[in-house]
Length: 273
Image (cartoon, rainbow, N blue to C red; front, side):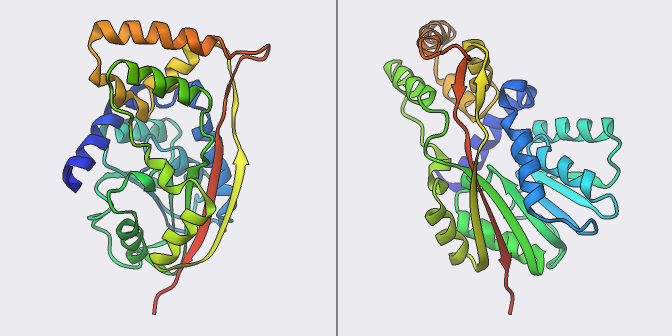
């Protein structure tokens, strides 16, 4: 698969998931966005770029803090951006704009932004180091970049139940892109290689209990996992969901079904000669 095909596949997956991306079962996106912005230590006058903005979780959190400056969110998925724009309009955030574009061809002048962030998006790039260098170009000297990823325990044991079951239906085990950045060592090595310094990485548990297996279905249906199910016929999908959700119900305890979400957050500074 070449780079363009990879990007089209990612875009199609998130176009499909866009309608329910803000569902309560995926609330860790909102909570982690607030955590990311808090750790960027904004002064209030920075121009900020949010890459892979999705439906605008981070961009909206930033715009609420940066009333005296401008926030720009970019994404490959037009449907995600339509939802992001609608949310921003409803909140009357006039300092926030969204742009449909590729990180490799953003169309911004060099040294345009004071800060940039990329929440759970960097690992979808076909060439992460090149993507980081593209971000570096539009950041001012000394500009800060923050990214988030997941630890290896993401959504376990539910994730294992999902993969084992979907393989029974002849679906090839998906390549989980976030595993490319599932440790501080991997993140640090990548960022150093792309010319970033002062790299600081921390983790935070942002998991919670789902009420039932239907909420787990919402997680699958409204996230990047949605693409898995396009490989199943309507009949097989119905049977798969019946069997899989029954397995998920079996791991519930008195509090519900635990959704494991440990988030890794890295902040760094771009150095330019």
